[in-house]
Length: 337
Image (tube, rainbow, N blue to C red; front, top):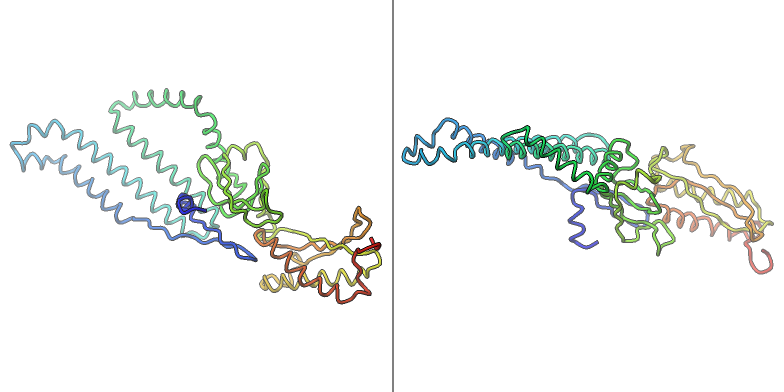
């Protein structure tokens, strides 16, 4: 990803760092600038009361007559700027509380986006109230403009409704790996109109590693397509499986024991805190391949970002054990197929 593109996604404050085995999410530090906002709000309030009490006219009597023409407009402007700064300050305080809460990263991200949307709406109301002295005329004008824009911007409005659906129904969060409408990747940003994925798998890859490409799709997609979230009820794991082809004359009990041991040993090494949990125990089953040999399939839990690495580690553990007993394990070769 280029530097400029990375800068665009800074508001998601997520950076995915993929190693050979797993991935993790790092959170960027945020500066809330609460004291700066409070000082600006105080400054605008002081300006308003200076004008309200007529201190300018008292200090400059010769300028009083000319100043009276601009004073009402400047008073309204200072009051509007004070109101805007109060709204901005309240939004920053709310973001700080949300970021320090114990909720998951995805939940905090959505709450921050809702807070910012509310802040922008309130600021827009203040600006409209400042621009139009007659609030009734402002409301009528706003209604007519909304009606025209509603017809002209149907697709963006539908995507905004999709964003509301994502926030409240939570089909996915920032940091989740999802598959939707043929696209698969890690969610790195949920905007008001679109969602950004860091693609995994893709056209050029046969595994679940990141492809290096970015996918952006409108939020309206979630209203008409099924969204498959890898972070399901078994979070943080999903189930995966790896087949090994063997001959019919193989010792099936021995093959099963080798595959289960390889999967369980790797899991214990990577996730010692869940070692011995029955829900994370691997399993082996056999099926007949259409090309006239058996497949020993080991199924195991794995974190979504570690599917390729875990499969490689299991095979590296299991194959030497299987090859060490040629009398018990035969592989399809030559005429033995």
